[in-house]
Image (cartoon, rainbow, N blue to C red; front, side, top):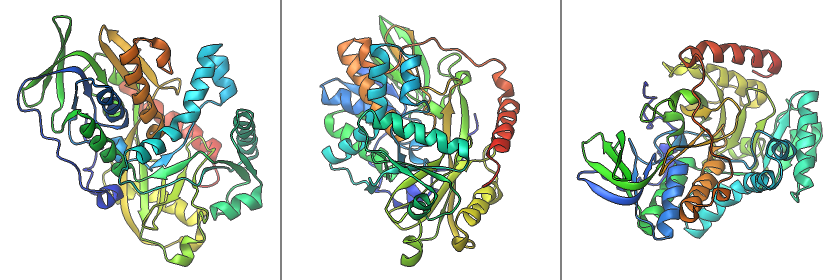
Length: 429
């Protein structure tokens, strides 16, 4: 699998606190649990296990936050793709109720951790606005707001004028506000999780790609790229959109797509007050959604889908620059300072998947673009499950790894889907 652009061109690497030391695994080691993957899920799992006194070693191929956790838009949005009523139909009884509670609490988990560990993370929590660009999208947003309102969320419906006032663009018919949402500097947050995990006793090794995973004496032996090994009773694999071939079939069970983003030069005070003046973050109801926000330096970020291949040059972000001019005509021509992308792992049913292919081995994969909150909370749930042994501590049932048929032709398959979605979304981009 080809590696993406280096992390250095991304805005987040330029504005995050320095990375902590995470030396490569240099000699064989033992631990109660070995976590593979230094993104939000892996770091959260390591943190919560270490806080409970469990011996943890985390292996990361590069450095914590190098992958999608340091390359996303930083929006912290609760919930899942499916609305609460649908989730309760998909998972009847107590399981559905627990899942809805879990989905609704993911943003709380992030901001609570930042506060509790006093992380150096630029953040804002003024709410998330989902704008609707069609009548069907407006009906969808209204139903979603009503379902969460019945569960105690102080949601707010927006008509066209209210949406324009809060968003700074005339492109939406209305929408709704979820007050639980917000934003973080995503790489700073990943590094904050890593520091908190280390302070709790977890040992994190960067530049230590897991190359082989074998059963040994009732436990597991993980060989790294440097040749040293970790022996552990249990293993958690949390590699998401950067999953390779460590486990048979896992990479082929998801579609790994890039989310492309641009960031403008810092806007003047007047221009900053014209876009998202209340500090909200936003994504919309389009099938190929657009998302946008201001960061702590006053830059406007816009993100969305791009080419299925890895980027080759600035032209691969041209569609987002066109969107900028259409959404915010008064910002047309504003210099673009940063262009970057990060992988998102999509499952066929648009739900995260938990797998247990062998005793003592647990896999989490699939973030569906809501990884900041979802995967942080998933790591906490995984740690709780490993401590208790109770499957009810996991928000989703454990399912078999099911490779997607004809996965090798995924570019053709996804191109067809994206073409269909673009036709349905016609209007903005």
